[in-house]
Structure formats: C-alpha cells, structure tokens
Length: 242
Image (cartoon, rainbow, N blue to C red):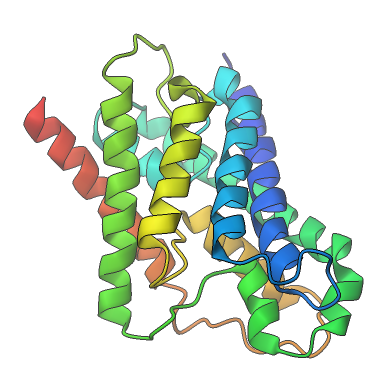
C-alpha cells in the first residue's frame, strides 16, 4: 500500500482519536455541559473508546500507530521502516491539531461559559497534578513503556503484515489505554502520545479562546520526551527478550 494512503489514514485516525478524546474532557469539565462532573472514570473510558475508533479507521491501512512515540518504538524494535517514521509523525501531528480545533468549534459556547483558564487548557493537553518535572517525565516514560511493550507482546501471537495498534484488534488496545489511564493517569494525565499533547497544545496557543492562559510551554517537553524515551526502552526490552 502506498505511503501516502497510510499517512492519510494515520491523519484521519488521529483526528478522530483527538476529537473524541479531547471531546470527553471538554464534555466533563466545561461549564454548562450536560456531562459536567462526569469524572476520571468517564474520561478514561472515553479515551479508550477514542483509541478504539481510531484503530477501526486506520488499522486496516496503516497499522493504526496514531502516536509518534509508538511509531518510533516500533521502528526501534525492527517492526516498522525508519524511512516511514517522519511521514507518519507528520500525519499524526496534523490529525491531532485538526482534531483539537474541531473540539473547540464544537464546544465553543461552553469554552466561553467557563471562567477557569486551567480547565480550558486541560481540554487540549496535559499538565501534572503535582509539578515535579523529572518525576513527571518518569511517569510519562513508564506509562509509555508499558503501552508499547504490551503492544509488542500482544503482536507476538499474530502474523500481521503491518504492526501497530490496528494489528491487535480494537478491543485489546482499548482495554490497554483504559488500564493505563485508570492506574497510571493520576500524576500527569497520561499523555503517552506527543500527537495527543503537543498538537492540541499548539491549537490552544493559536485559537482565539476567551480568557485563556499560557499554553504551558515550560512543561510541554515532558509529554513529548517522556513517551519517546519510554517507547524506545520498550523496544530495547522486547529485543532483549526475543
């Protein structure tokens, strides 16, 4: 299958991932939303189902990485061509950016009704519950290590031509995302995906959001570098074992 087609489905899959993932955060945190106060369980379930939908869309065509760190980790494990890494990442970032803009347009009235600037930023990207950047980095790296290591372990039982989250089927990876969020999400909000965090953060920076705060750029490297390091370590562990 041509690389352009694969990248197109990575873009669409990531767009849907962010539309539903950031969407559930908006639904449960923005003022006057019918879902206000839904809580962490709803958010983690929503993110899991968001990944599931992205996998259904992109899985048959691109392997449904939907995550630059996953793409890098799979390449490091020898399961994905390094030549395709940058095109995949570009597609994922564009999809994440467009998904975040769509969430803003959908919930525009609720953004306007919400006074707390931190809440508005939290719809787009993660910030730590307790700011301790090196521990936050460790948390993101460990959660991302778990994500890719389990994906690689899932795939050992499959004979799949294209390895990625789509090769697992939607249900196992949905459960994996939910488990990571419920167990390891409390410290940093479990970005575990630069396209889920950096691309929407960029959208927050440029959108004309009423009463918004800064986009948290001093922290923004953590949910990018942490997942990349964690996924590379997962690849090294997988290679060492197999």
